[in-house]
Image 1: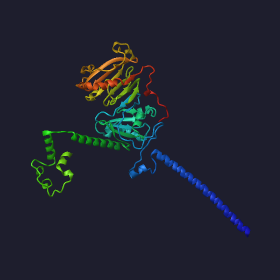
Image 2 (image 1 turned 180 degrees about the horizontal axis):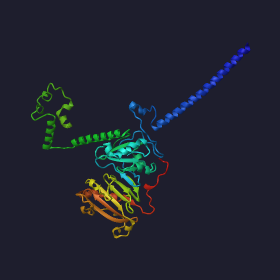
Image 3 (image 1 turned 135 degrees about the vertical axis):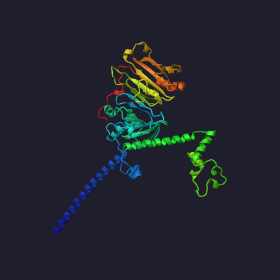
Image 4 (image 1 turned 30 degrees about the vertical axis):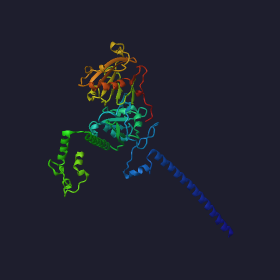
Length: 288
Length: 166
């Protein structure tokens, strides 16, 4: 009897030992997997594409995947959002071995810099579109320049094969560094009047790129109009005539009671409601 | 300040200038380097001496082209001057020195030999009336480029790329 009890007790002890060993081994495996997972996440964060990256939380579902080409050896890592500022000249060589420098701080026009690579699949459509400006429907006068990395990181013959000669193609690794290009395709829009960058980023398609440029041109035009109105500096009869034109356009003709107010009712007649600031004739004139 | 170099010519471009140094594909015989500098956007299809570009100039613009001739020109009287001018004077510019007579513009041209290479330097001012203002820019450009001797000058621009770095 005792022998049977002792035998059972030995089996239970052996089972407990084996179970403990198995649990320990599994624990070590799980710890290893967790550590490996953490290493992968850390690496992704360092590349700026980490899952659950706090910087990306604000973008929500609207965030889109951005094709990022791995920087070549020796390239310094760019910050996640390069600041807009003065646009340095793009200087380098052409695929044919000539030299070319494009200044961006002259002329009253926009310059669109397209940072492309010869081997980048998503760049193919832009190689074609940028060298056919009519297809892009860019604002009149927009200058297009394609910038690849220099001959130290691109094969000139491959770039040459994609260049049509219709727009300048400059090979310049320095320009990629100057503009902190994270990968290709990447686009920078420069206002020649100020010599400053007015927009930059990645476009998923040709349509998005066109829209980016057209919006920048529209904003630039609106700003110029505002500046022009402020700097018109009309005086005397010209100023009076300009004011008459604005009032006439607003429906206020000579003899209108609002021009000779005696009471508030003359300015804000009952039944027309109380206008907001935009309804004040003076503001209309300023807006015009 | 952008620096460009090719075909034995190096230019440290003054602010506001852009430029190109190129050799046209030969149709007959040899072709030699041409360097063009401008304060406005240089079209790709511009002629050696600015045809197609000078029409785009505003009054405050400057265009210059450095044109190299073949070695057969060495020793000829036209290229007897050794080295480019140190600077230009207002009196050097005149509308009658323009290759294309565009009203309001003025130009100058000189021939010289430098580093055993014969050159012509042709400069156009967008406005003869503004030459006093534009001249310092021209003279700054004049001192901004260097010319290497023809033999042994392998421009960095045409070196073969190292394989496997793309």
